[in-house]
Length: 185
Image (cartoon, rainbow, N blue to C red; front, side, top):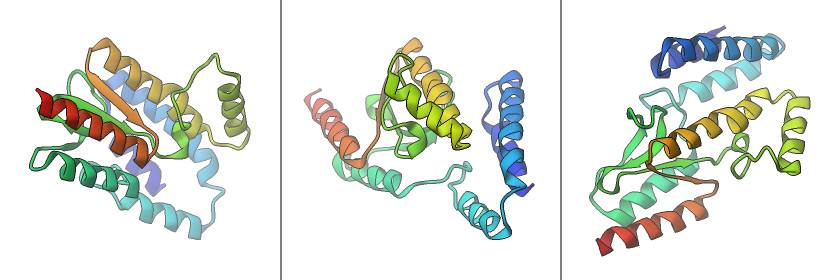
């Protein structure tokens, strides 16, 4: 399908190594092919329009991400803010990187990020995972329990300043605190 081809191209572009790329492709293939063929043409058209409404790196931008970006620019003034930025220390497409304070911010505004960091020892989190799985939302399960966890662990292992937010309010409060620390130094 068109969507699978687009996802395959995006994964090829963003994977950090061939083995990861092959695992990601296999996962996307297994999950997407199963449900994609069952969808009607109107649904496929809506998905295609959404997926093609992306930034230059192929990642859709949410309204919340746009609002947060605007808030960073207003708060910090005329500074560089890199979007969908990856480095050797953080090889994922981070929503925002602020070089002047060497800080990475991921906004987890979509439902598929669980509303907070996944905790395997939390019964409510396990219940949510089971509910999503039973509803056929395996990509959400993967995002929350594998992808987001891997990003968090990578940031910690590499000692980078990494923050996650789940709402615009939370993001603006974080940005205010980061700015206060920035002007103090």
